Length: 329
Image (cartoon, rainbow, N blue to C red; front, side):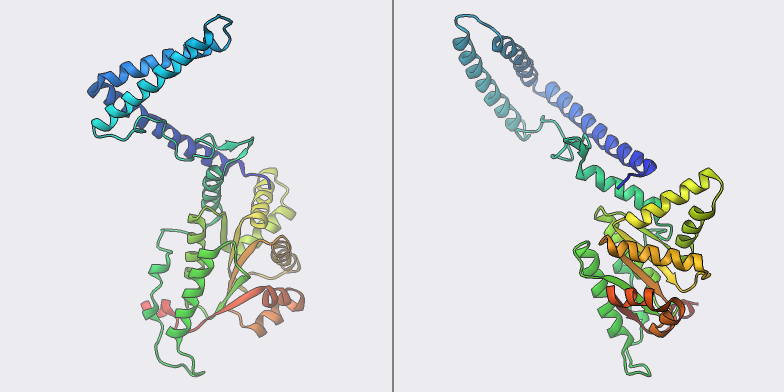
């Protein structure tokens, strides 16, 4: 997978900010302890001189080199013991003056054996999600804000109790976000307008993104527009932006398409939709699609090829009840 330069730059800047903050805190602790316990400063100076002497003796051919090394190690251990006692005696831990790092794997460098460390990858995915997820707006998209009281607790004409159905849908959505990416299927959120599909898919997106995975979350119209721009754009910059966005939609950890069925369907857009869905399925990358369409409407609009993938590889979650937006008005 190629990395998006803008998102990677943001990720490196965030890691550098953390590293700088850790260094500043380390320096503050040193200054604090040296001012209040001067003997620690003296010991640290002696320990540094010992390190220089140890390096000299390592290449020395002096006859008593081994004796000098033994004496140096003994003195070193005594100094470290005294230093630890002074720190603990002043109400601090023995490691209070140790280097501060947020990631013990790469020690805040961002790389391990020439490869991106998991800490930098997490920051990268967060930056990428921020860039790709235009429908995540104000931070309110959280499971605790999904109000089940807005769904009737009496049976509807089909005998289903909306609040009970949506309680199960909410639970399954939470489980999906918590288990991601080790989930058994993709999700198809189906139901009429104003029943919370967009909001709940956004809750999943935010929960997954906060765990360090990259999420692309957008309307079906905006997603397919990027495919069409990539195909037809003559301008180098717009074509390049569209190419990058399409690549990320195909490769991100979780792709969420909102409002399937509202797009203007043409042979080009239908082909792009099939490419997006099928490529992600083939590569084992997870997707969530929300739609107002029923099974019959999906089959009639998109044909058997795409419909078979939507119903075969996606788990359908039914959204029922009354239009929440109209209720709130």
